[in-house]
Image (cartoon, rainbow, N blue to C red; front, side, top):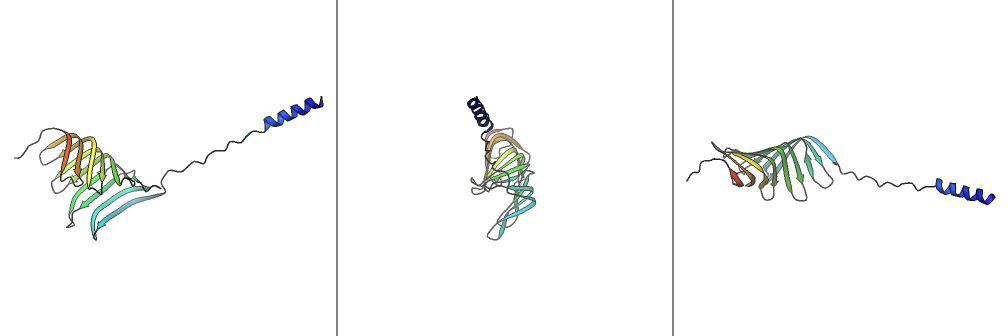
Length: 173
């Protein structure tokens, strides 16, 4: 009888001891810093090349930056005159690729040629001074409107190629 009680007690003790679950710590992937009402200037040779305004800026551990409330940029020529502007409802900078992405209502204006590009997504490579998209685009020129899908252009919109153009426009010979 004592043996039976001993084995029952041993079994009860073994059942009551269970492993505690060790949970892995959750890794934080959110922003490491946040700034509001940001105004940044990019310069070359002591001349302002780009002025950037944003209501909110998040910076991440990877060096990526997010602008969840949109971005506005001004691009300046060598002589200091305003050449073009870019506006987007949401923007993201990918540090590893040195590339920007604008989403939402994206608008690029070339003030010298009085042209305007509108699209829902646009990528910008600052090192190459190029913009591009795979999305639908609208370009308003003086008197003409060109539509299409896909675009490759200089960042100031001074030269561009629409991959699949549509619409009517006047060709000057």
